[in-house]
Structures are given as C-alpha cells and as structure tokens.
Amino acid sequence: MDHLVSIFLVLAAGLPVVFLLAKSRWLLWPVLLAFLSRIATAILHRYIVPLPQGSADALAFDRVAVDWATQYGCTGFFEHYNSSASYVYSSIIATIYACVDYVPFSVQVINVLMGIYGVIFLALATKEVWGEHYAKRVGVILALFPFLVIFSSVGLRETFIFLGFSSGIYFLVLFHGDRGGRFLALSILMFQFSALFHGAMALATSALFLGLSLKPLLRPNKTKQQFGFALIAFLTMMALVVLGAIYAYTNLSLHKLGSLEQLDVDQIADIAASRSRGSAAYLSGFQINSFTDFVIQSPIRLLYFLFSPFPWNISHPLHVMGFFDGVFYIFIFYWCFKYRRKVFEHPATLQVLIIVLVLAFAFSFGTSNFGTATRHRAKFALAVLVIVAPCFYSSFRKRAN
Image 1: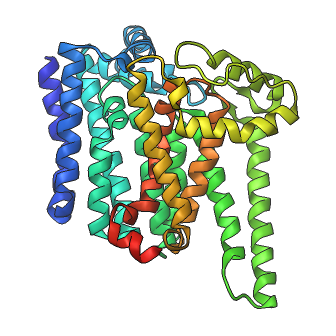
Image 2: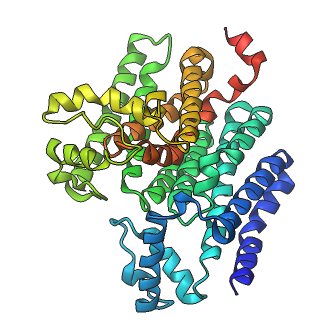
C-alpha cells in the first residue's frame, strides 16, 4: 500500500514537471538530479539508515498527525488546522493518513516533489534575471545542495517553507521585470503561504515592502522634482509598512515568541538562551540583559547564523558538513559585496538581498545552535544564488573587476 500510494503521488504531482520540461528543456538536468538525489535519500532514511534530521521534530510532526488522523478522520482537516500554530504541516499529513492509510514514505515523497518545485522556481527566477545559461548552473547547485536534499527527503516542514518562499521570489522577480502588479500580489501570497508553516517567514512580506520603499530613492540622476516624488513614494510605502507592522503588532502571533504585543527584550533573551544548548551551541556566554545588548549583539548573531560553524565550533565529525555549508555562504555573500555594482544592476536583486537579510536577522535571535541555523537558512538564504549566479563563471568575474 505504501509503495502504491507513493507511486501515485509521484505520477500525479510530477505531471506539471513533465509539461514544464517539454517547454524548458534546460531544466532537465536540474530536475533529474533533484529528483534522484532526494528520492535516494528518502529511501535511505526510510528503509536503510535513519538520518539524524529525520528524528526529533520530524517524529513529533508525525506523532501529532497520527493522533489527529485517528481523532478527526478524513474530513476533519479544519478541526485541527490552526494557522497561528506550528503544526500546519501535521494537519496536512493527518489528512493523508486519515484518507489513505498510515504511509510515512508517501509523506516523504510529497516532500521530495515539493523540494523539486522549490528548485524549479529559484532556477526560473535566475533565468529571468540572468538567462538560461546561468540558471542551469544554479539549478544544479540547488538540486544537489546537501541540506536541501536532506530536508526534502525526511518528514519536516522545511520543504513547504522553501517552496512557498522560492515561488514568492520568482513572482517578485517577474514583477520587477514589468510583468504587472498581479505578480506582486502572487509574491506576497506565496510568502504568506510559507508563513503558515513558520510564522517568522511572514517577515518576508515586510522586507518586500521595505525594498520597494527604497527603490524610488535609488534611481540615479534625479531632478529635484523627481526626488520630491521619490521621497513622497518612499514615505507612502513606509506608512504602509508601519500600518502593516501595527496590524501585526496587535494581531499576529509568532510560534515560540508568543504575541507580538507582549514581546520584549526579556522574552528574546529567554529564547536565545534556551536555544544555546548541546554540542552545536554557539554564543552561550552572550546574555541579553538590555536593549543595548540586543543592538550590540545583532551583527554578531547575524554572522553566526549565516556562516557558522566556524573552525573553533567543530567538536564532532558531523559538524564538518555544517562547516562547509557555512563556507559556501561566506563565498556567496563575498561575491555579493565584491561584484555589487554588476549584480545589483537588475532591479530585483537588491530586493532579494534585503528579504534574505531581514529573515536572517529575525531567525538569528531565535537560534543559538548551528545545527538549527543550517536548517533555518536553507529555507531562504539560498535565494542569494539568484543574485550571484554569473559569479560562478570566471569570465563574468573578469569583466566585473
């Protein structure tokens, strides 16, 4: 039964991929590599050797899903669905279990397929900015990126978050390519979809508006009148952001942070301290006792979130994989800085960087463990590849110098 359901899901969800490949043949290798690497890892985890990333949270999601499937049945999705909690992923799994059967591997197959779609959307976004030649290489990197492969192969919500975020980036790029305001609406919608699975991802929408508010002021060679209009546009966009922030402040609840209306420095300190445990913990000696500490520690926590583990953090062979992951991000952000004049010529690339940095800043205060950091940054930080895609070619780097 398990295998039949899994095969059906592959065929049903894979049909759109087949149609896409017929139109965009350059995607063949990225999609093929993404599928083979993820399905092989999923089989390895289910039938041979369980992966560490497939325990703890993954088992918790599965356990909750089984309870809900038993209690509420096939049509009980909205009985246990709660968009403000952290178990929306369990609600989806519960519906599958209740309507079909308890088939854990089929859930992994769904994650595999959602992970492939996430790769496709970021590759398509790269194509819109730089063309097929560069997008193909980005697609291959995303297809084989170790942590993306792992999180797309086990029972975790990361693959749904990555799918929502990457599709949001794609629609945002289309919007900046003068394809129409409907793509801006689709981008916001997909960012909010990713926020269903982790509330902090809602900040991608705020970062989007922040980037849009800066755009009019960054246009070169403005007359005084044009600058005045740009300033009005900036203030208008900022007003919209403030109104959105007020709404979030009074209505939104983020998982593990509680109500934003009650959020203060003490809560942030407690959260950071609670995450600073285990062999992968970092900055365990950094305490947040005041708003000044919060400000001073912000850049340090951001650097650790994006680039850890550093050599002095490695105490276990498994940490080496995380080390190379951090080194990869160091090179990516280094290229962003070194070739900034060239890579930020496209109107969408600076917008993407702002979104990634805002999310990284937010997650850096809920994370004091580089094992968790590698998992969180895989959700969104790889969107920076859309910016630096040409930098993987030495010919581009020579021209940009």
